[in-house]
Amino acid sequence: MQKITACLWFDNQAEEAAEYYVSVFDNARIKDVSRYGEGGPGPVGQAIVVAFDIEGQAFQALNGGPAFSFTEAVSFVIDCASQDEVDRYWNALTDGGTESQCGWLKDRYGVSWQIVPSVLGQLIGGPDPEGSQRAMQAMLGMRKLDIAELQKAYDGG
Image 1 (cartoon, helix red, strand yellow):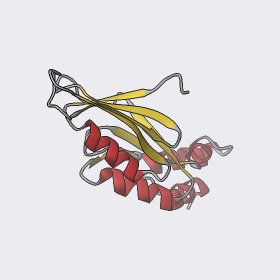
Image 2 (spheres, rainbow, N blue to C red):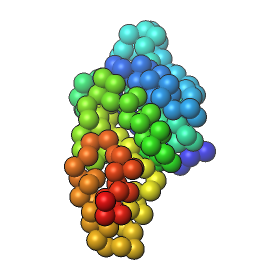
Image 3 (cartoon, rainbow, N blue to C red):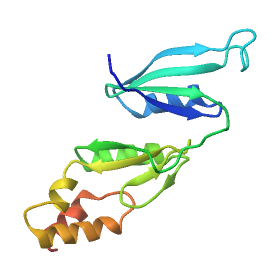
């Protein structure tokens, strides 16, 4: 059992959001849905908490009401092995959401994500300081990260 679980606070879209997230990732599933009964603070049958897993990471989606909303102060980083994977997650999570810079986005629920190619650390922290600086500058000008362009910048092209 995982000791720490991320809990995402939604107004009333917890179940909808959990279903969306498990549709985006291949290795994801809803584990449990707790629902309001008679006399609860929400409509009978509405989800209170939805437990779900994404790539082995446990999450909870909570219908907590409108008191809180998401900010960029917390984000989830998706490590991507290829440009196809970057493109897939970027396209899925920006559908109804908003793009930002440097691989950051907000999905349709306002949750922040970073879509990061695995090679990024090698390019912006590689053994060639000038190449790393060029790759960093290239990244700063991007929304969705482009591995070929980052590599080209690192190589001096």
